[in-house]
Image (cartoon, rainbow, N blue to C red; front, side, top):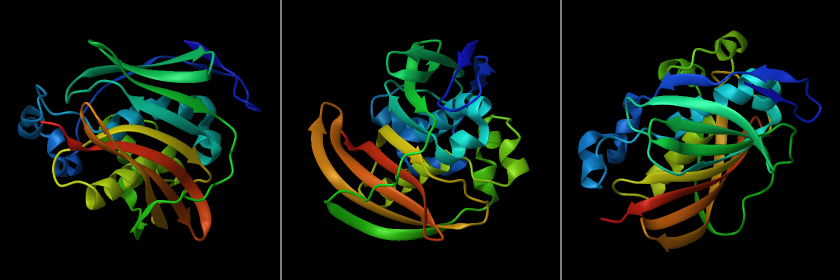
Length: 248
């Protein structure tokens, strides 16, 4: 149990939360989220999508800070080790020198960590780089229902009629998948700043730029700036990193 004291927020008492990690059918377009594709890349079984792990982790700040975090908070999430389909997971809050954090653990230890915060930051324009095609996306009921489909039973999204915050890195993943990869790939890190909530059924506009590419032991990586707006107003800005060519 942890006592959170976000900037300007009332103290909230949180308890560790547990669930079973699952892959959703729509994640099968990336072979790494299938048993066959994961084994071809050297893993023992299907990796759970990073956005699914992140969706589980949002349970903690949403319980503590509610709509305030969804509208103007944020997270920097790093994926250290795979979470596999069917893993029993625990999401635990903590505090360290960098502030408030949550960690996703399995029986094998820490898998994903995230620094989380409250308090808004101004939207920033994408940095110079390789501009990718802009897209428009209508966010239907599946986006509000995302948490429930993964096993997170928080009723807030349905009650408020708003999109789940895991939608934003999921959209960034779609940009990566559509424009930068041809086979298996792995989401490794995201810095996500929220600027507003979005009603289910709204259309969002997405602009993205690849501002860095580099090689790593696991393969070639790309880092993107992704800007999401709705009706001309900023919704989320994301720095998104992925291994776009997994080394064999």
